[in-house]
Length: 118
Image 1 (cartoon, rainbow, N blue to C red):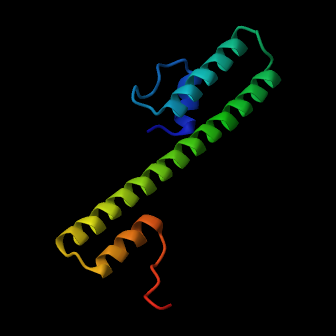
Image 2 (cartoon, rainbow, N blue to C red):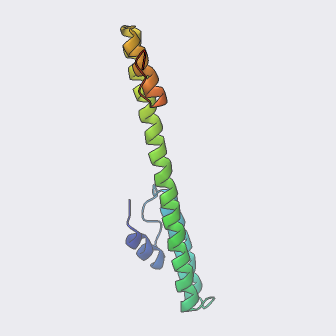
Image 3 (cartoon, rainbow, N blue to C red):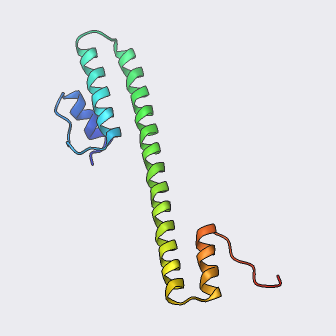
């Protein structure tokens, strides 16, 4: 993956996207910056307007990356949960005890089961 600086330079130099397999947030940043630089070169916007738009583009990029990372963390938690459920259920299937049944419920609900009489 390319850094923000590499993407910025590539957009400024009007090069092709640095990597064809860049994540969407990085691709969008490149396109937006390329457009800003092109509009500045043609005189369609002032330097101040360009800088303001670039700042907004960077804020949008950071937001997009934060959303992507949030979804990745959530997907990892979900994957871990299902793996742990599968392991607990498999353990119960192989050794059907009340203790293993309790462990299954603990994994599923995230709470320790109360012992009888507590």
